[in-house]
Image (cartoon, helix red, strand yellow):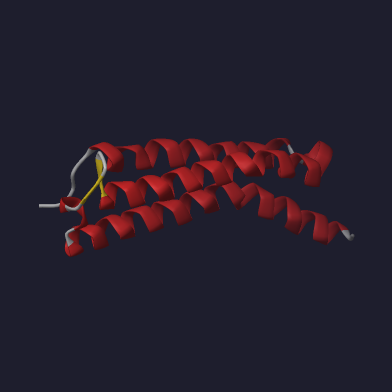
Length: 109
């Protein structure tokens, strides 16, 4: 592998966490808006509404994805993994905190 390939791989791992956060955020809030329009917040699925259950599933998928990336980033980059690993942690923390309010707050009126 060339140095350029190593740099591209390092950069890809650096933005992996924020990319997972961005995708999760976009999917959750897009689905939240769609659910409001289609009335999913009024349809119960056990103790949760269908809308809340779907957003919860997306939220958990984002969290699990970030956690799953923590090991491979280290195996892929070895001694150069410290900063990209922080990027994955940033994505994980951002996913947990920015999407948590959707699970407890009603946004449909």
